[in-house]
Amino acid sequence: MALVVATVVAGVTFLTRRSDAQWTERLEVIGMPLAGGVAFWLLLSSPALRVTASQVSYGVAWPFRLHIRRSDLAYIFRGQARMRGWRPCYFLVTRDDTPRITMSAVIFTDEGMTELAKRLEVPIKGDFSAQVRARFD
Image (cartoon, helix red, strand yellow):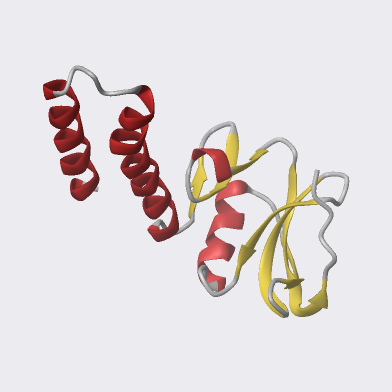
């Protein structure tokens, strides 16, 4: 991120010294490194599970974060989802039995998900032998 900031500062300095710079040059010098830095940050960020008083969210960053209201959460289900082959996953399931959020079991331990279910006061069901075709809204 420091490299992106240094590039933007150098670009602003370059463009302020040249009064005849076009808007396309400004976009190339400032916007492209900034967009590249944000994309690089999103690729390197690991997904996070956040629980607040009103909702549960999971994902990397704002535009890619999935949300479910705590009042809509019925249970956590262990199963397998098709993610580059069938992989063990945890599903946050709503009251109408729709899996809304899928989380890889590689990232979260069984003990951690059991603790999360206790904290959310919802049951944890299933095992990793069931294959689930997830439906998402």
